Length: 58
Image: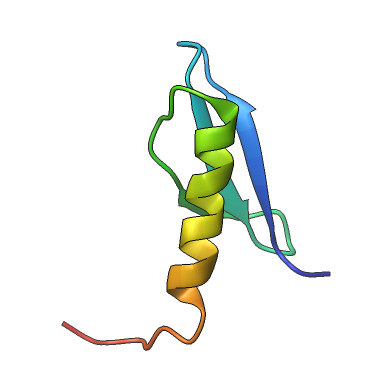
């Protein structure tokens, strides 16, 4: 099973997303958004940015 993005409303009433690996571990957390649709767009932006991204040591 692949990982998944979860969009949720936090205690402050803001929307956030987290990326969970297939084992259920949270591997990334997004910032807070005013609307659910904005949080979903944040997920989509991460998906686009990560597609083919290189791993770079700094």
